[in-house]
Amino acid sequence: MTWDNEKLVSLVNAIDDSELTAYVHCLCVNPAYHGQGIEK
Image (cartoon, rainbow, N blue to C red):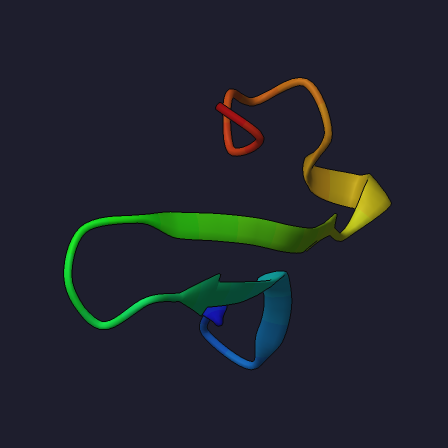
C-alpha cells in the first residue's frame, strides 16, 4: 500500500515462490494519481 497522508494511493497484490519469481496479480491506483508514474 502507498499512502499520501490520509489518502490511499495504491494497492498491489503479488504471488511469489519464496525464492526467485514474483507475479504481480493486481495493481490498483487511485484515479486522482493516474499519470504520475506510479503504475510503472
